[in-house]
Length: 345
Image (cartoon, rainbow, N blue to C red; front, top):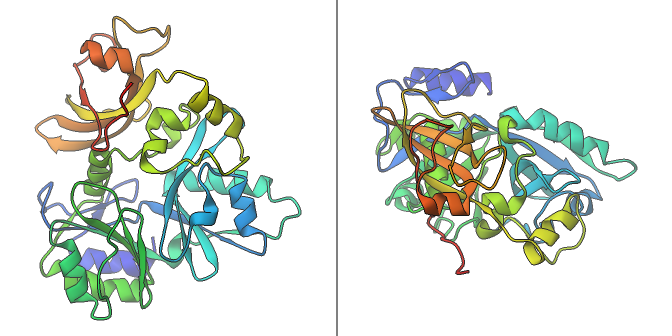
C-alpha cells in the first residue's frame, strides 16, 4: 500500500491488521452506503505489442472483449485446467491490467513471465502506483455523480467501466449497486472525503462479504489448483469463453463443459463457529462419493456472534442431502444457490 495513502487512512481512523487489510474499529459490520479501502488487491500491468495475444493464450476469457468500457472476470489455470488464480481484467488507455489478491500476485507474475519467451510483452507489478476503493449501497451511483461533477452516469451493468478524469470506475456484481474505483492516491484522497460525508467507512472484509453474497469466486493460495473453473461457477459470472480458442488448461475446461458431468459447484451460505473457517478447509458428508472430501471452503467473512458468511465448493448431492458439515463432526453448513442460480438439469 502506498505510504501516503496509508497515512491518510490512519488520520481517518483506520488501522491495519497483520495481513495489511484496513480496519475501522469503531465502524459497524455493515452499512448502506458503505466505503471500503481495497488495498488487499494487487495489480499487474501488461503492455507491449503482443500483450493482447499473450493474455489470450493464458486466461479463460476472451481478452479481445476487454475495452475501456468493459472489464471482465477470468481464471488463470495450470495445464491440468485447475485454477491458479481468479482475475479481473481491464484496460486503461493502451495497457491491460490484471487485478487479483496481493497474496496471489507474486506467483501469478512469476508464472506469466515464464511464458513470455520472445513475445513483446512487459509484465509489471504496479500495485503501489494505484489506490483502489469500493463504494456500495442503493444510493452509491448518486453519491458518485455528486462527488464527480464530470460523471454523467455511473457504470450501469456488471463489469461496465467508465473513466472519470484520472479515475477508473467499474461496476461490480452484487444485489446492491457497488463500484470499484481506481486511480492515483491524491485523487482518491479527495474523493474518499467527499464520499465519507455520507457513506460509512467499513473494514476491507465487508467487500469480501459482498463478493461472497454475489457468488463471485476468489482463489486464495490455500485453494490454488483445487478447482476447475466450473466448480467455482466461473462460467456463470461470464468468466469463461468456450469459443475463444486455446489457452493453458483449455482442453480440460472444455471437456468438463461438453463431455463431463459436473459434480461440484460453488454455493453460498452460513456456518456457526467460534473461529474463522479457513480457505481450503475440508467439508464432510456421510454420502460423499469422494474418499477425500465432500467440499472445500473458498472464503469466509464474519457476521458477528460466531456466525460466518461462507462460499464453498461442495458436492451437489451432499448439499441436496443437507448433512454437510465443516469437517467430520463439525458444525452443519447452511448452503444455497448464489443469486445467479444454476441452470435446470
